[in-house]
Image (cartoon, rainbow, N blue to C red):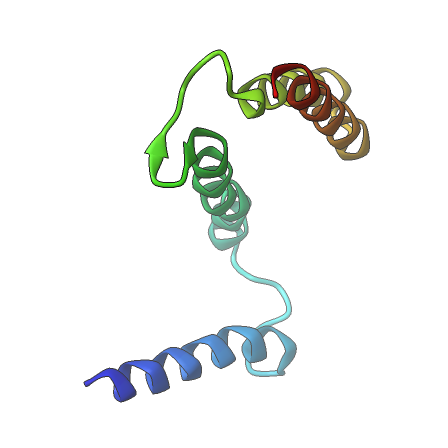
Length: 104
């Protein structure tokens, strides 16, 4: 049973990569599809980021000793103000490193 699932997953993964590059798909997608695609990256990345901030070694950790929470809050604040990815990354990583140095 596992081999058909693996094979089907491979075909689906290949198709999702191939179709946008081929002439099969139309050049311009319908407006409702374009609007829906705007939210895909947020929907995919948010659980990954939240999971990496709040869960460590299968333990749910929300405490004052978690430097990732402070870095995330600083990065969110800077992102909302500056709207710059580079500045957000620099500030977030700086806060993370400073708090890791202080706390640990």
